[in-house]
Length: 490
Image 1: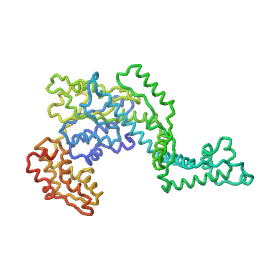
Image 2 (image 1 turned 30 degrees about the vertical axis):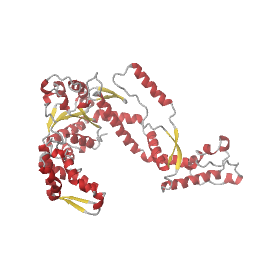
Image 3 (image 1 turned 180 degrees about the horizontal axis):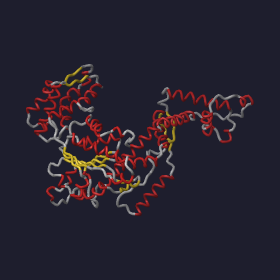
Image 4 (image 1 turned 90 degrees about the vertical axis):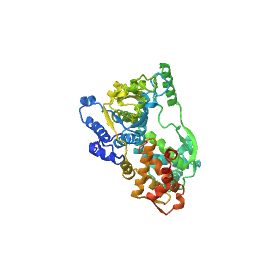
């Protein structure tokens, strides 16, 4: 979840700077998003009564495809450490029809948040879980060979000092039931216990040196369920179905879910570490933290909002149209949605809608939904200069990605300025002649330019390849002469 201890550092200016690292241009959208994120921090500093009255400023991003709408929202959520869900408005149907209802947005977001928190909590106890798993592996390796039944200790053995620690003694005593009956346990000599402790230390040293990774052992594990069984609420459930669901959960809780399996030490370490980590993690705390994170920091990005608008205010009988808009109203405005982890309030979630609005306008949405998205931000189409910046500036630029990929094959890839200019020019030309898909066109152009090199990269190990204008032109000239670029560049 969001680390509000560091939130005071994320001023709107700083947020815009961080977004500039990955998205070129669109200053208006970045400013609006930065203010929305900063307002969350500001609201937390207010008295509870006032904070409860301040609602998030939901917004609609208006702009053609491929200009960075989704990437901006995704980067904002990552920057804030907030639960984030991207969905399309066209996925949903009006309540009463077969299909996904809008409440599933919140249920999906809650699932993501629970996974986020569970992974974070698991990482916190990972070191302890690994130590516990190691102990279980050592015990399993020791018990592979049955210990002999011991005779009563002699007086000398009874007086023999032990240099083992209390922890080693306790660990060796755990092996007694696997080696002898309860009546024999009391007769195991101190010398035998010392031998077990020495073997335990020897096995521990061998494990630390990774000398037993492929040895097979038998371990007892829980079933493959990662999380405890929880109640899953579905809209429209009858009281009888609710009762059956609860009864099924109770039966799962009471049933023994332990089973034995034979695996390698390496695999056992993975399985047992995950199992011990799950035991150490407080499940109730995970759900509570996830719920609080979703309610206070959740960000929902609803794409293709223009596809469910009433074009020209004509009657729309599509069950994914006006009915979905009306179902979205309470979720966006603030309501309580039942999830498998309990009720979740949507009052302070940030909803960001987006659409190209080629055939519709934001005013074609029903007035009530327009009111739930009071802010509108227009994103401008990308120019050839923007394409050139996209190839050069972002930290995850395509040029850097291809350089990293080919470095695996010991190929050094360099892009000259004129080579990047030619790639940007071809991308813009393709968008003009065919469907404008924005910056996504750069992916197809770059792949076409580097297709031959990527295929035969192993044959060029140790070489340095410069992608300049002649290099690009040699691979794209035949396409530029053909007006139907869409035949080659999708």
